Amino acid sequence: MCGIAGWFDTTGCSPPDRELIARMTGTLVHRGPDGQGFHFAPGIALGHRRLAIIDLATGDQPMFNDSKSVAIVFNGEIYNFRELRQELVGRGHRFNTASDTEVIIRAWEEWQERCVDQLTGMFAFALWDAPQRKLFLARDRLGEKPLYYALLPDGGLIFGSELKALLVHPGVSRQIDPCAVEDFFALGYVPEPRTIYRNVLKLPAAHTLTVTRGKQVHLHEYWKPASVPGHPRQADEVAGELIDLLARITKSQLVADVPVGAFLSGGVDSSGTAALMAEAAAGPIRCFTIGFDDPRFDETAYAAAVAKRYSAEHIVRHMTGTETEFVSALARIFDEPFGDSSALPSCFLMQLAREHVKVALSGDGGDELFAGYRRYAFHQREQRLRHIIPAPLRRLMFGALGEVYPRLDRGPRFLRARHTFRELSLDPEPGFFLNVSITEDDERAALFTAGFRRSLQGYHSSEVISRYWSQAPGDDPLAVAQYVDLKTWLPGDILTKVDRTAMAFGLETRVPMLDHRFVEWALALPGRMKIFNGTQKYVLKRAFERLVPRDVLYRPKRGFSVPLASWFRGALGTAFRQDITARSGL
Image (tube, rainbow, N blue to C red):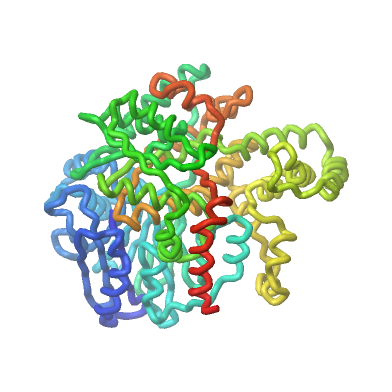
């Protein structure tokens, strides 16, 4: 795991500004505290910060082919690099290192832009092919690793693992993108390809960007989540197949030349992942858990039960709401607005894990693949009603109920019917947007000035959902909702949170459930394998029954939530107010 940055002159062969590239790369020292390297040539500059995980002796970057005509800077891990290496040796390629980075170089020599099709793992890399005068940027299929880029007015293209690396460059405009502001207030994050700045973009997940000097920039989507047919029909058969596949993937992700641990929240996904890791590991594993003083949010007892079952070294630390040191760090970590409150405990968890290991396995992805979020069950039930009640009657009846029902956002869940009535009055796509929104249209309208609303030029954040709704394979309402989340919520919120908070402390995270082969396998499952008789993540829980205590599997879902209201009334709220005041100069 590392940080990368660089510059490319798309119009000529100007000499690179070495000091500037060094400063851009230097902003990423937290991602790669173990060393740095650079490649400078006319019209091109590559910078790298290294977090040494595999091939500690010969894995330094930038790395080159034998003739020095191809150079690469790479952030991530390629889990099938040994198999690929063997195939490439059979095709006549020679290797000088034991690293996965060199496998990408040889794969480029063999397959050019199609090399990404051969890679299984998480990655963001920049590869310079001097004879072709070509810069090739690539990002992994699910978006575990980030990559930002900007085309400058002078014809330069700059890129980096985090937004902060690009903002060092004086040619980058700090003009705010009003559409990104609308997205943030609607969804709680800025979805790709936008950033908060108008002229800086995220390379979307599963995309490559090819830039040839003097020619056009070409953006290419090389993979889309798609189901692979052929599942057995019985739940027990599917559960067995699930465990076999996920166990192999988990074992493959334990490869490292440094200590590896696991996050253990006490929920279904992290417990199953830790259990599979324990079965594959040569000795006792280390697990990391964050607890809370408020018992309504604390799940350490469930995590402890799993850890005890596998004789794991269980390292627990409690948050009290007085961890004010993270307040000023959050803006620096994320670089742009990010509204997920679980970023706070994530920082605390990553810091704890990094004190003991350099790599940690995460259970993320289970909710998206196996319908663990409550919104999926709501969406499924609402869609059944939409099929029964004609649209004009729905709009009239539920629209009226949504208008007269009081807004009880802070009341018990069974009293919060206004939102449901409004969703039912809408068609599936706008209904799902309302489901995932953190604010409603009238709330955003009250926040935005008239001038700002004009600057949106009619843009509405529902376009983020629409972009992927129409692309979803099939017409099953649950599968469509999951596809949209895989393209929006997962890379924009969940994986952004995991990557930035982990890398802020020089920790590599690996997510077995987001192996693209497992994603395709899970997407092919029928809806009844995901939600059955009111049980969400049904087949995943069936699969984990051999590994995880039943009271962990079948208890009500909590999620990684925090007692934010009480914290904001105490020291944490005071620290946030002071930080905002200081930053705004008030």
